[in-house]
Length: 150
Image 1 (tube, rainbow, N blue to C red):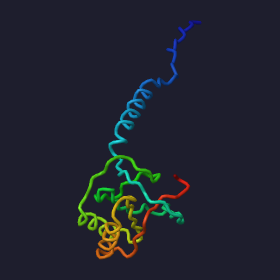
Image 2: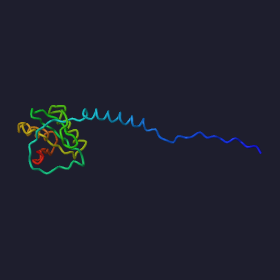
Image 3: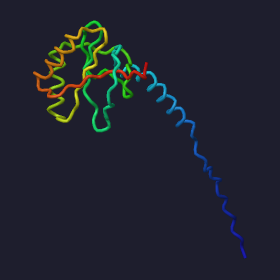
Image 4: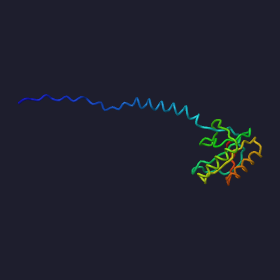
């Protein structure tokens, strides 16, 4: 009887090389760390303090119009946790009213709030609220800082 030669199977390396995945993840981490501060916008405002009930924003993000101590207007200038982030783009009152009206047309249940610096003239806050109401905003809320936060 003739014996056939045995087949030699090459050894299979079943390990996964994860080094390229780690490299990609580190590059993405660096990119996100560098772009996040650029994307976020905010205005530094020293809010007046008052006892008030907290508003639940889980349903939809509100529209927030901010007036800084120099009387400049900004729109949606808060981070997700309600804190100021960095300097945002100042806008004229007419553009802010247009943007708020457009958002209310798309999302009629959107809440609109005014954040006024404690140093800004009371008349500026009232005229902003009046201007917003003339442009289709039925209810305007005011954002204050909790006395416990100080």
